Image 1 (cartoon, rainbow, N blue to C red):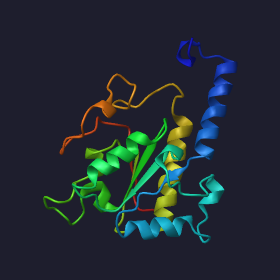
Image 2 (tube, rainbow, N blue to C red; image 1 turned 135 degrees about the vertical axis):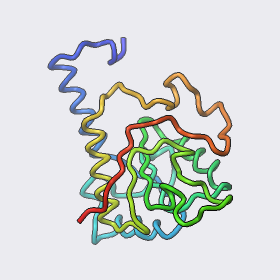
Image 3 (cartoon, helix red, strand yellow; image 1 turned 90 degrees about the vertical axis):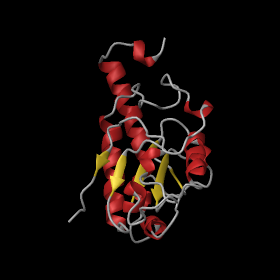
Image 4 (tube, rainbow, N blue to C red; image 1 turned 120 degrees about the horizontal axis):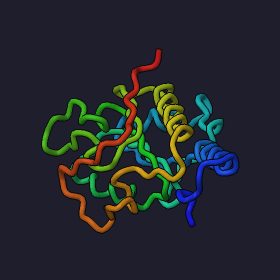
Length: 191
């Protein structure tokens, strides 16, 4: 009997709130900086902006220790299978923030070598705009992700995730693959 079989009552409701609080208070990001946005991502983790107050002290070097991928910068066609492999090795539940216009839409690089949006490779939860987005924008994207985790259901799985009826790990990642539609949030630039 899993959690999805239990009816919603005061005990399971409290347990679900506790698990969601723990998840959003200990999101561990993977290091995946590809271009100039990575400098802003590193600045966000430094002392001036201090991601430690959100439970994100260290960017993890191994995808098996991370549950958040911040894709910072443009993704080339050669890098796309590597990005997908790192995503597949991350633990469930996992989230993705697309940082910058190059990661979100290909930016000014509208050519054959650059993927025109990381959402063609992995499902994206939050899009952070800018070229490059400043650390405040990334923090705003992280807080938006925390809110999505707080409001999400514990047993609800994202369509297209491994174990939700489609085994993406067993399938090769074709170029031009489009992720299933998700509840991704597109942020405006904070004022």
